Image (cartoon, rainbow, N blue to C red; front, side, top):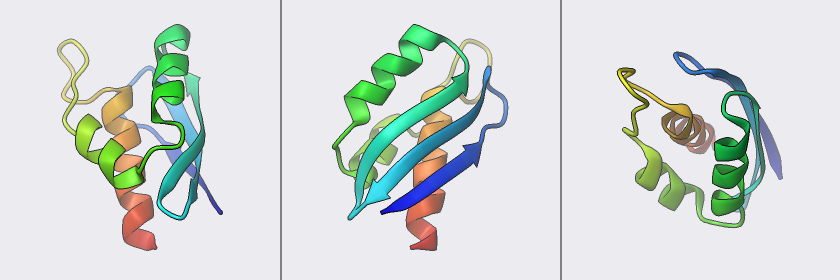
Length: 84
């Protein structure tokens, strides 16, 4: 199991922590941001394929911003997968 800490950019949340185990997302937590929404996202992605989640969330925006907390999670996953 690999633990990932990702510093977000351009969002209300400041950090995302998660575990990557055999290509599966586990234990996602966000620091800051919209508490209820981010708890919901964490529950929805738990136990799902990292590639699937990255594909679903990439490009999600928040209001006038060109990114969002889900998009930042997708970026964190993509970086983690690229690092092996």
